Image (tube, rainbow, N blue to C red; front, top):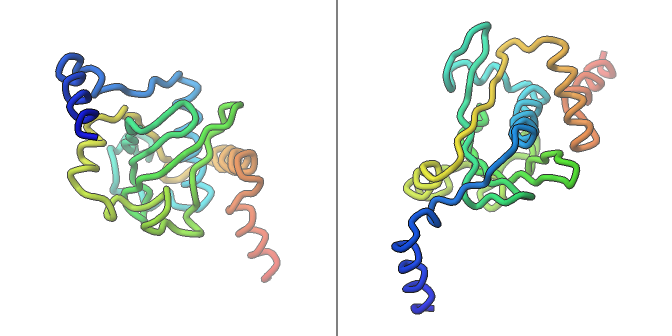
Length: 178
C-alpha cells in the first residue's frame, strides 16, 4: 500500500498533467448533459428559484455553473451544480449508449446524504472546492419564464429519459381534482 502511494506521488511529480486529467466532451454530449438538467428544472417547476443564482443574462435568463468532476467517465458523470431551492448538489448522471443523460434521483424523492445524488453540505468543504478547481466547467441556462415550446421540449425530454413527466402528472392531478 505504501509503495503504491510512493509510486503515485513519483509519477505525479514527473508528469503533473496526470493529476489534471479531464473528461473531454463533444458538443452533443455537453448539450445532452445540460438539457437533462434544464429539462428537470422546468419539469419540476423550479425555474423561478434561480432568479438570484448564477449570472443574469438578457431576456430573463440565468447562466448557472456546472462542474464535471475528474471522477467522471464516458458513461457516468459526477456533477456539482446548484439545484434550487435544494442547494448545491453532488450528483451522478449516467449516459445511455445512444447518448441520453439520466440524472440520479429526482426532486420529488429527495436527495439523502447516503445517495449518489446529495447536497454538497454533506461533504468536506475542501474536497468540494478541490473537485471544482480540477473539474471541467460548463454552464446551463434557465429561462425564468419559459416559453410553451421550451416546456414542451422539457416534457418530451423527461418522457424519453424516464418514461414520465412530473409536469404532465401534476397537470393531470389538477384536472382530476376539479
